[in-house]
Structure formats: C-alpha cells, structure tokens
Image 1 (cartoon, one colour):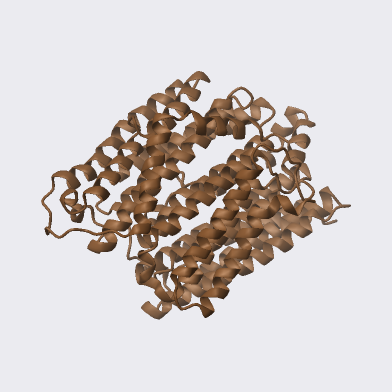
Image 2 (cartoon, rainbow over the protein chains, first blue to last red):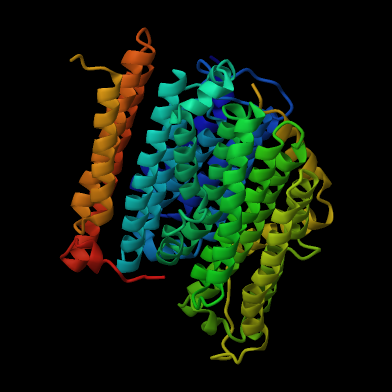
Length: 486
Length: 103
C-alpha cells in the first residue's frame, strides 16, 4: 500500500471539504472558485508528474495506477478546471450555494478519477455511485421546476441502471467467484469454452454490464434521460455531464472489458458485436433526432448520443481485435480528449451567449455574429470540429477511430459512420447559418467576462492544436492504451 | 427438500423483476424509489448466496452487499431530497405530472 500514489484523489477530497468549510466564513465567494481551481491544478500536476513511472496495483489489486488511469485523471482534472472557469458568471443564479457547487464538482471529479483507476467490481461500483450521486445533485442545482424535474428523472433512471449493473456484477461474481478484474479473466480462461457457453450466467452478466455502462455513456437504447436532463440542468453542469460522465463511462468500459473479458477471442468478438450494433443505432438515432430540435442544449444532447456512437465504433474494433488494435484503444482515448475540448468549447460559448440573452432557443441566436463576433466564431469552430472537418480536432479523432475499424475488418461500420457524419453536418450547420445570416432581434452587444473567455480560448486553441499537430497527444494515448493489462 | 443456491437465485430474480416492474409502472415517485430499493436488495440476496455457496471461505459477497446497502442509503437520501424539492413547487409527486420536458 502506497498512499503517495493516491495524492491526486486525496487532494481533491481535501479541497472539496475545504471549499465547504470556507464557504461558511468567507464573504467574497470568488475565493471559493480560486480554491477549487487550485485543488484541480495540484491534482493534475501531481498526476502529470507521475507519468512515465511504473507502479503496482494498490490496495490488494483494487486500484491500478497505470498510464491509462493517469491519462484519464489528467483529462478529468482538465475538464473540471474548464467547467469551473466557465461557470464564473453562471453561479450568480445560485449565489448562496456556490460552495456546495464547487465541492460537488470536485467530488464527482474524484469519483471519475477512481472510475478510471478501479480494477475491482466493488471499487468500481462505489466510484461510479460517487460520481453519479454528486451529478444528481448538481443537475437539480437551479431548484426551479425544470431543473428538479431533470434531476429526478436522472436519479430514478440512473438508480435503475445501476441496479441492473449490480445484478450483472453479482452474476459475474457468482460465475467466477472473483471480483478483481484480472482474477475474473484468469477464472474465465481456465474454463473450457463449452462450459462458458452452457452456462448463460456470464453472458447475461456481460449484457447487464453493457446496459449499466450504456446508461453512463448515453448509448441508444439507454439514452432516454439525455435530452431532458441536458435541457433542465444548469448549462455548465450539462457541459460537465456531456464530457466528464461520458469519458468516465468509456474509461470503465475499456478497463473492464479489456482486463476481465478481453480473452478468449470468441468472447471478446461477442461483446464487440454488441457494441457494433449499439454504435449503429446510437449514431442513427442521435443524428436523426437532433435534426428537428429547437433548443440548443437538446440539440447538443442528441449530438452527444451520436458522438457516443462514433466512440463505440472504437469499442467494437477493440472487441474484434483486442490484442492487435492498439490504434483502436488509443483512438478512443484521443477521440475522448478532442471531444472533451470541442464539446466544452461549444457549451462555454452557449453558456456565455444564453446567460446574457436569457434563452437556449436556437432561433434567439439569430444574428449572433454581429452581436458577439468572438463567441459566434468560437461556437462555429467547435461545431465544425463536431462534424469532423479539418483542420479541427474532430477530424483527426474520427480519422483514427475509423481507420482502426477499417483495418480490422469493420468497413461496413465505417461506411455507416461516415454517412452519419454527413447527416450531422446538416443540424450543426443550421446553427451556424442562424448565427451568421439570421436577422438579429436587437443590435445590442452580448458582453462576456474574463474567466469564460479564458476557458473558451483554451478549448479552441486545444481543438486547433489537436487537429493540426495531433502527434503529441496521440503518443500519450498510445502509451496509455497499450499499458492497461495487469 | 434442502434449500440450495438455486432457491436463493430464483428468489433474487423474482424480487428483481417485481422491483423493475414496479419502477416502470408506478406513478408515485416515492414508490418508484421503493421499487428501486427492492431491486438493489434482490441483488444483495444473490451476492450473499453466491458468496456462501461459491466461495464459502471468503467474505467477498457479504462485503459487497454491505457496500451496496450504504450506497443505496445515500442514493435514497438524495432522491427523497429531490422529491421534496418537487413537492414544494408542485404539491404533488405523481410522476405523470412531472412532465415539463418531453422529447
């Protein structure tokens, strides 16, 4: 046991408590934001310093501190940092509860970090619930009817999903007698294939795990909560949900399915096929349902369902060729990094605009290019990246995932994904068209303040850099993708 | 007749299905929450039964069940708070009236 390896997580927990305590005594609430940001910087810095080392799994193999976990910890710290920066103006809507807001964001980040590091079904469940329960509260933070309704829907559906997930875990535990992921893999490999096929408990368990995780990553048919929760939640929380929660879900799927069910090949081909089917229906449902949406948050919600579909193309590749497709794994990691920057950028621009004009309707964004040229330009750039057009990061991300799929015999899936990318261009560009050529409701400028501008600048710069020179992050993703067998 | 692993698993599966059925059909938000609790406790039964019959020397399943109970309690606390917030605005917790947003 080496507590020093847990410094990022301990830091976040300490700072979350510190923010709540300071909230009691401090009058100047912006201090709380600085404290929360400092906690994230320390956690991220320590994580970055640990990169390159090789550490054994901790706490009787419950937590892994490998490059895969470190990559995701850095990603989550970065996401939370940007979300807190972006909520600088928005928090005025719940001025009295800023302390709890920042503390809950830190706690859910802590949960996500543990999700990426977990190597045991028990710690997996706890990490997942730590993330989810913090998010349930955050979604209801506005306390108006829409927000509490979104929160209740999220909680009830999330609890049902986690009950199904637990049932799957119980079946897997019952079948193998193990909860540690590596031990599960060894137990499965020691059985003859016919024994595994004759007893459906393991396969049933895997299907239930996919259902539970599918809820987290918003894959169709577990996506029912997405549009409502995205619309009702405070917009910074929506941004956080759409990238953080999704990335954590993919981290945990990669970890569990690679470590526990990656061998033998026929087993991984089976769940690879499930993910291929889910990918197809997620892309189609997400993209088609996004077309008629009038609310920008709902539109981005459906778009995030479609993006989960593209990511699942990577998971399918991973299932069909778990040993040979490093490009598949690292493609998912790269896609998640670029998707995080892109979607956060889009949401930050939406927060800045809609907070001032008091509306999330796309029609009210008309003429925004004249009223807020910088914000409109940034939003356009992020939407272009979501379509997957160069020079933005979205292009390279899709390129890596699709080429890995094509190399491993999933060309049909790539064709469907490419057709869907074209469909998606329609509704993303509709927003762009409204902003650039629509008639403005008033000539009044839409001002924006420093912190969100900084966050937006970081996002757009990141999207551009990942699109033009993807090599650096891709190398990190390759190291992280290769090293998570233990 | 001796009671074996199968009996516990059947009981657990039946309870889980009752819980799922209730969660999908009931209108009162508190009852939906109760049905979810039923689902989680059904899982606990199978965890403990598996632990007793599959790995009798270890306590993995029992420990897992305790963690599930603790987390479920936290979840219900948050759930009831949210239901209370809805009740304040709506003086009603009928899930079919909580319908401001539809797709």
